[in-house]
Amino acid sequence: MKDSKAYIKATEHIKDLNLTEKEIEISKALFREAYETERISSYMIGTRYRNVVETHIAIAVAIRSNLFTAYMAIGEIFKKNQATIIHYMKVHDEVLRHDKKYMELYRRLEDIVRAKIDEDRWSEKSIDFKDDDKDVIIKRLRSENARLRLNLNKLKDDLYNIKSIVK
Image 1 (cartoon, rainbow, N blue to C red):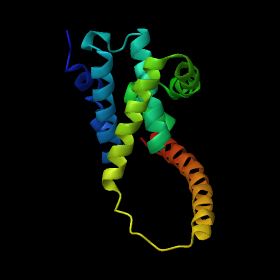
Image 2: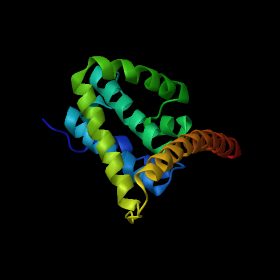
Image 3: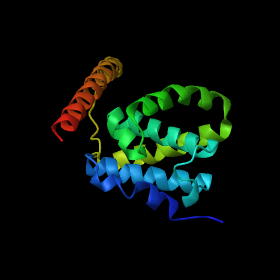
């Protein structure tokens, strides 16, 4: 029997966490999709059933990879400590390599996150560049984007740690 309330039970505390509205919206959407896809019921929440743990790994990695949310904040989403979330990140690659069903779930979650993020982006305007210019610009932007993401991750972790101390 499908339990459509399981994801609600798993996410009811998220509104009280120190997350942005977008992080809350995306987290709830990921839980809903993952729990419904994996048929996770309310009684399974908090257990160590393999499909529950792997579902949580996929959700956590999708959040961290796309929203760059701090480990501690992701831990609070799952009511786990940050060490568990770091472990999830390490386990993800191995599970992704060996479990086709997990890979399909993770890709579905990635698509949801990207779609939600794209809702907020303004439409691109076409600019006429020479083909050579485009390649150089794209390389520079990708490099800068990677550098900024790393800085953002560090800053978010620092900020979250500071906010936790202040509480």
